[in-house]
Length: 145
Image (cartoon, rainbow, N blue to C red; front, side):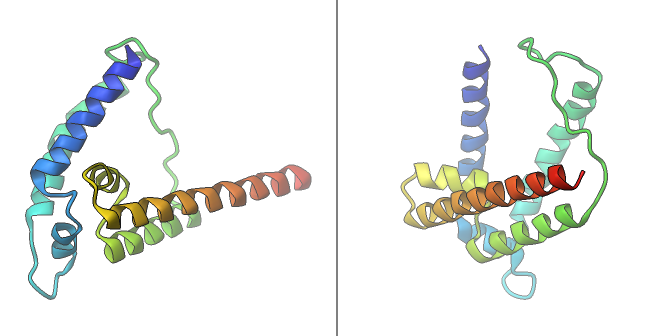
């Protein structure tokens, strides 16, 4: 049941990205171009997502189990540290250069856009580098502590 629900949620998310045009990097770059031909449509999509997400997360915080019976696993960390800020900056730079973030990139890849293939390959390489660095960091902490 969890796999089917995940598939359905992913399909709805992907369809929403296609319908809103957010799988098109030109649309995203138009939103980020504040000094040029600014396209505010992404702000409307984000506003819609926030309007749906806020009540859903408020409800989720009060539950121990999801609607399909799986345990609720919401983030618990609330601190803003160097790693969070650094990762956010890197994410923003990548988003501004490519016009993709992970979800829309996967949708665009499924649509056969070759620039999405380059982005997804770079994203996977970045995830691998992070994992290797994280393992080193944990090993160093284990030796020190």
